[in-house]
Image 1 (cartoon, helix red, strand yellow):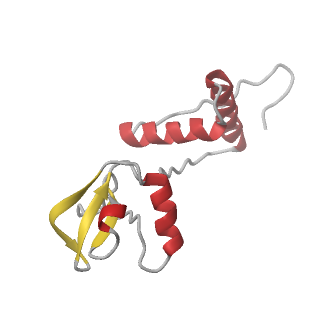
Image 2 (tube, helix red, strand yellow):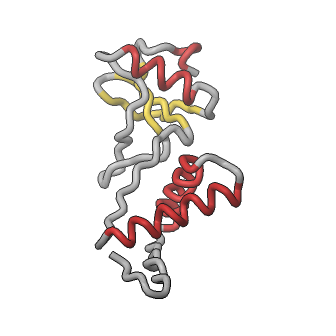
Length: 133
C-alpha cells in the first residue's frame, strides 16, 4: 500500500497497537528518520493494510497495517534461580522445536500478550548435596 499511496497525505500505523484512548500508537513511517520507514517497509510491506475512513492525524489519512508491531515483554525475576530456570526452559523448547531461542521467546511473548496469562516458572529442583544459590 505504501508504494501505491506513498507518504504524502498518509501516515502508517500498526493495526494491533492502540493506547488507552483507542488511538494507534506504533507508527511505521517517519517524517524525520527515512531509515525507519525503509526498515518498516522491508519488514511489514507484505502485510494487509487499509485506510481508516474519517481518521486523520496531523492532517494526514491513517493507514493501518495488520500484525506490524514488535512484541515487547518484561519479565521480573525474584532471584537468580528463577532466571536460570527460565533460560533452561527456553533452551529446552528451542531444542525440542528445533528453532532458534529467539523464535521461542517471540512466540512466548505473543502468547503471553494475547492470553494475558501469568506464567509461573518454578525454580530448578536442587541436586542432592548441592544447595541452589
